[in-house]
Picture (cartoon, rainbow, N blue to C red):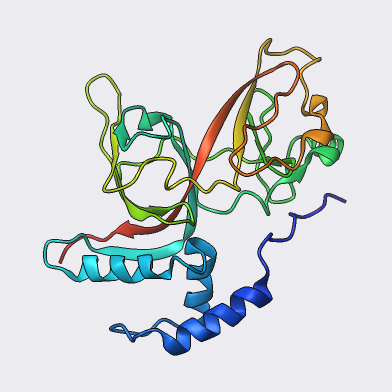
Length: 249
């Protein structure tokens, strides 16, 4: 049978201890975060970054600040200069509304995926001419393209949590993006690596995910994804989306 996703790298026991202390010692907000919310924040921000959530809550409560609603974490696949704070090309960005890792298929199980007609256990369809891979060696479903225009609360799970604005396409089809603070690198989740693979010679029987070298996995945080023989590769940064702008009433 096709196996599941790897276990998380962080220790839940350690997070629980920090979360319990944080929930007891942190000052109350309008509605104090539950222990579960605190644990979620620790996964997103890290033990030293919980203040980012409080800072954002304070900002959005200001009259001039944006109003956001919290959502289950989604994942943006982004392209651009890591040092940039804004740019164009967001029409080439995608969005996973569900975590694609647990829904993925191991490279070693590709023969089973092929035998099933390319239909994964999570019901997504594998496209041999456009497929995705993550840092552990799991074949993933494609994100949805393009990323819709709007304002997103994004983080890389490190020091920066900020607002990403994606503008509607202009007359040439270009979509601009900008961050309220920080750079694209600052909101990239470094342990999450992802790349898109397209065959150099479409239809060639020699181009297969089986060409991937298993010794290349797992990929180190921040490193490029491995090349796969017969395919062109495009690396994407992964951003966590933890909120979207709510219409003002």
